[in-house]
Image (cartoon, rainbow, N blue to C red):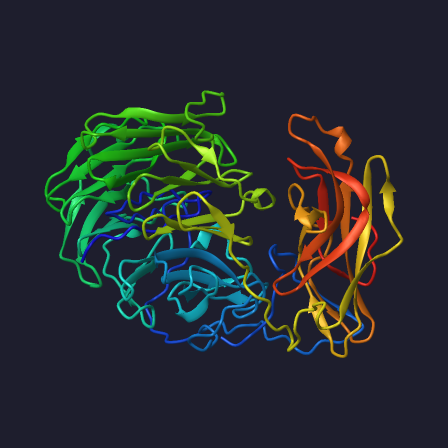
Length: 598
């Protein structure tokens, strides 16, 4: 079985080390409940839903119609049934169904994890795509713990498929599950410790786990020793287990993380990782029988990733968080199997910028050739960057991600230069050549209480209410009213993507509107037939108060309002200027009736 290039983790939460020859999953630092293994073949009926892109509060607001009982409440003992092959919508698994992470094997097959974001009990489901992420279909429920409400980072799921049939699923503390039938059934692997991290190479998966002799501390088992356990890919029982010794400057901080696999017998791990303290890089070439201490240039920074797509040139990424996922970020390379390192790029809050890698936590991936590096950027702004010179120089990829800053991100490469970059609660982006990106369609709108989402085609009209508020020279609020003139009820919900546009072609101007959370706006609103209404407030700030160094004023002529597809509207707005470089517009969530202020 040959090596496979693997997926990346959400950059704001996890480190990872993924190369052409290895997969790495670092789940340390998160807490969740474990669950015994199981087998589920399918998966749930259509339930409740969220908005087109950004989750709002889940209050059900009715405009002139009493709703039927909700189907959102899920069983607490087993996941609701969803027929295998069901097209994934934003209500399939419950309110606010979204894709949490993806693992692309090729342009014709990729897997993902999907879950709801509602106030009820939710479950994780395996989903798959055969068209590069343009559509997704339910495969089966995953054997991972259920959750109530938004699951949060303490239950961040991870999947890794090494073949179309064999894959792995886990969360932070474990257990680790394996499937050999494309996710229809799962078995729990026999692992000696907790918080497994793993890499695969040549038909062997190497798992590092922390073997604590007493209760695992709440802040993590950093004082627990670790074992290396090796398995045939797809197997649940090990080939053997070896102890990872305490070597080097990590001292008493013993917990180890798998970084990369170089051969079926050769693995590199990092020991330690206490914030601001030295780590130890260890390598074995004989399945853990003996270990060698490698040079670690990261000093007081945490070692996050080791990439070995090119076995003759390693890339080591390290980061020290100074708060809000911002701090010191460094990238090193070695052509001597880790015995010596040379600096490639560095950035820090102090302004010591070399190569523009950014002072945020990155998750770095390489394409199959190793010539293009991609970095999912953490921090408040988020985003994506790339390097085409081996990591020495980095550039921001010009995609719209600013309004999702702080959300978890995921990145998975496939083929020669393909990749999908996604933002939880936000969009996904696709590249087939490593440099040119386009936004993928969002999940389509599903049914809510048996109703379809409101669209122009079904009779919903959009208009500007004359009750405009604000100060013309500063900030103006425009109430946008949706009226259902059709013969059947429909719904709107959430925080739509509101984009200023100009010209007959309605070309986008600047950034989309920032989503403002106001009270309970953003819940479901059912518009009764023949006159039911709902509204969204659009707010425009004066562009004249911003420095021209990053704000070039441009006149807008209207806005497009995009809920979950196919619900998209356009309305003309009184002429005014917006910044083309930064967002000077805001929008609220949908509300019943008329709302005139933000």
